Length: 376
Image (tube, rainbow, N blue to C red; front, side, top):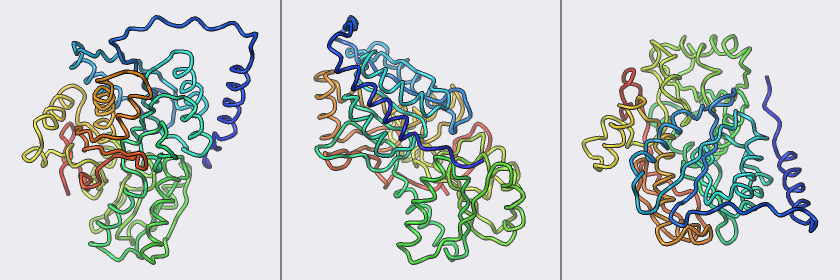
């Protein structure tokens, strides 16, 4: 299976159709929904079904946890969760529908998207703040724009991973493996670029779900560091054959089901994430962060970094909407502020819309089922 085709052409079609619809003076006006002036209407687009990874269930649990904890707030947040079922086309359609027809005040995108020029244009046309909880490129445009990244960028993650690997082995001896899925392509490109910056020629192996195990098994025994690009589902069976002395670097997007599937080789795996979701960080964590980890774990199991950012997404939007829920006002508050969340402290400006503080990134390791990870 090769990489899924880009959604650029489809996005362009959606934009053209939207423009044509808006320009038709004979169209019957859509009735304006009744608005609650004290409510911030937020829609989250998640993959709760379908084959696209990562699954959105951890983010759904985090969003619902925040909503439950703040149900009686002065500025009510009305949360709507939409399953886009792993479909790139449905993601774009629902983004436009929620912004234009449902009149959401803000949108959270918790799916892996190919954030190309066409998708970025769709976000700008939405004219409401759109927060991404999975890694994307720096989304700021001239004047700031409407997209905000709550996860580290692929380039930031690549630097953290390669810094750690360089302390343990010679980078030129490492193997970079990619199944060319949407998340894998972003990871691979960032790792290759960072390796080139360090004057290292990358050793890249491209695999598919059908041939990954056959191609990887012979090389894992002789390789000290292996970088798996993107969500790790394709690589898990082969990774179980790794032996002591090999370090497996997994993606920021892996979850605890993935790590558990590694079984006996789980201790060989590390992945970048927020240090504040680690059990060993609780002694230095803020009360809010420690409370989130404990409460989320009691409800759904240990939180991933992505789940923590989803929880933060509602907190950040609620804070930015304290004065007004007008989308322009919320955007301006976002891109001129600093927000302390459970995953990190986010800092935005007109020229920086990827707000994750990289000082809060760490390499995490598996401890046991239903136990938060530990710092490496």
